[in-house]
Length: 185
Image (tube, rainbow, N blue to C red; front, side, top):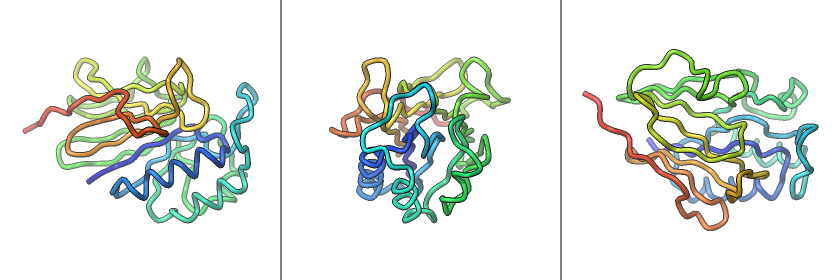
């Protein structure tokens, strides 16, 4: 299974359109959205082409292929616009050899992890800073932000394909960071 991850769209129509274009051409089975989809939040500047209602319309076109979690800027009102559930603060995906724990990052984060087994993958957003690494006995992936990147990184998204976790530049589609998952028996 091939998975694409995006986080922190924050109502940016241009970022959302680019994420969905990358998703269509990626061959990914699922687009996993890690929260902060429609609202920019009181601490963030307005992102490029800020238009939460249009963002919802674009995302709804892919509702049957989206899995999402709630971010700290998402609300029950946002759910009224979206045709896929966003109110769970975390989700779990079971793959053949491991579990993916999906969350936004404001409740669980690398310094406050849920119970995970060796080889599991913790996937989060929130920081707007990309990350793909093995930490002790688990893997950590943060796709960065598609709309408001921080830390000098470009806008980005994540992929899990053929046992490799990658964060790629949204514009150039070049890998920024990657880590290979070790096989478990």
